Image 1: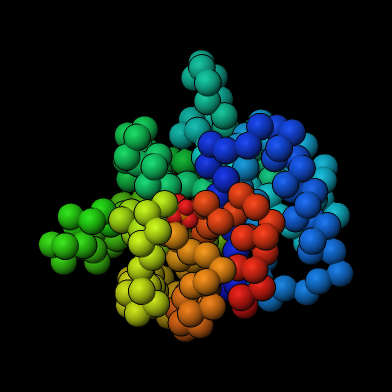
Image 2: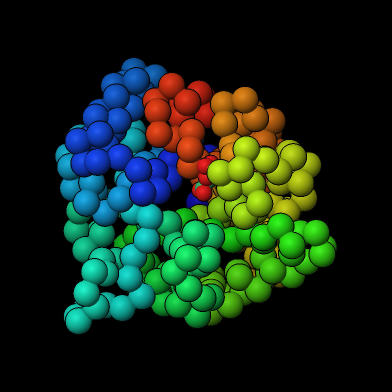
Amino acid sequence: MRRNIVAGNWKMNKTLQEGATLAKELKTALTGKTVNCDVIICSPFIHLTAIHETVKDSQVKLGAQNCADKVSGAYTGEVSAAMVASTGAQYVIIGHSERRAYYGETNAILKEKVRLALDNQLIPIFCIGEVLEEREAGKQNEVVNKQISESLFDLSAEDFGKIVLAYEPVWAIGTGKTATAAQAQEMHAFIRQTVAGKYGTAVAAETSILYGGSANAGNAKELFSNPDVDGGLIGGASLKVETFLPIAEAF
Ligand code: PGA
């Protein structure tokens, strides 16, 4: 179902103790407050159990940043979707551009990860987005279409309906260079239209599409006011309550 979502992607930041403290601070800051969005923390794997204990009875939800493309077995260093789910986490980021670029995650691998996440009742936050050269060549729609169709379009409409999409232009991630509200809206509308082409307008209308890439308290309101932007995937600004909470309050 389409929802407003503000999700923090901590990436490889915070020790266990620092992460536990931040989660507690966020929970406290939200206590007694009503925000018009789901607030999600996506922490490193080792933080999940501790943070789940902290946030389980609050409005803060929890997710991982990745999961393995295999069920279980001899895959040293990997963490399966079932393991993520067993911590109490409900979400998992899949296909972040840093995973695609630095760890060779292809559309085919990501398709496996999405399948396993869904098999384990996790909600995938599936990331898509073009690099700068692709945008400069006017190929952003083609790139995003390929990412979505190759990883997701074998899903049933019912399963697709469980997925959250996150459009993150790679040139905007961690660069301070946000897509303009108009650029975000244009791409989000294209994504929704792509989903409609495959699954119909009802499924497309119910899909949450988040924007990510240098989103912050200063630009969130304008980004979120677009009809097809349903929230944000927030990196740098999610690492402190005072920079993260105002983004959730922008709705
Ligand atoms: P950023 O990262 O907000 O630091 O640009 C967003 C993301 O990569 O999810």
